[in-house]
Length: 245
Picture 1 (tube, rainbow, N blue to C red):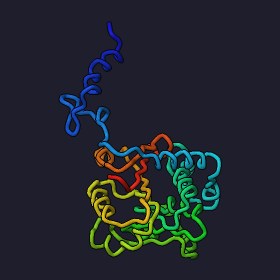
Picture 2: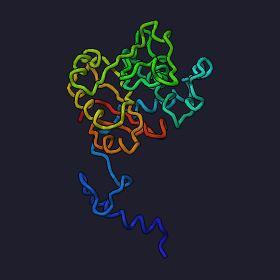
Picture 3: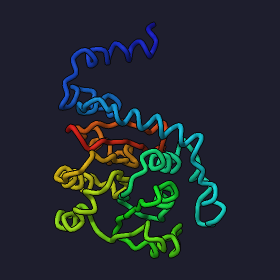
Picture 4: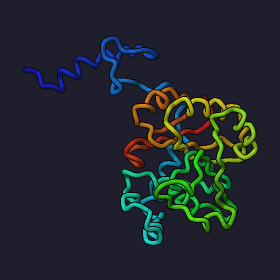
């Protein structure tokens, strides 16, 4: 009797030979058998990933956050598995003068990024809820004292509000996108970003790309992209270069 793997291989081999995307694969509508939309080879992303992974292993240290703030959970420094070390490493490697975060929540991601910004760098984090009102917040007032961290209570999925922040957005080199994951917001954001005249194509780091609500959105992105889940967050981490779609 053929092994289970042999039987599976026979069943999916026609799909490999004659993929029928876009669209469903006959009677196999499984996310496991889905393929991403074609995107240009992510050469820049591969180079950036190598540097960031090595930096996360050897150069990034966020232990002080756990020591100094009782609100910071023990699991935040797990890596791979959580995204914080990789996110901090990405900032360390890229040295963006402007980084934008979408989804402040407790503020822990913003703190990790801020630690490795260049001296003249800043982070603007967008949310609909003031950080002071978040249960288990990790931010304190002094984190904003030097002007390198700012929160704006703005919905960037709203084209009018996006337009009001266009000048800031156009100056950003790195985006960390940890928004609502309802796809409506993410699709609106991507449409708006496509209208911005960036000096250099920015890098977008998406969180939670393997959540059911995000799978289709991620797979349909036609920009250069790279799945970094094995090096980042267990629920999905993906890098996108906003160029060449």
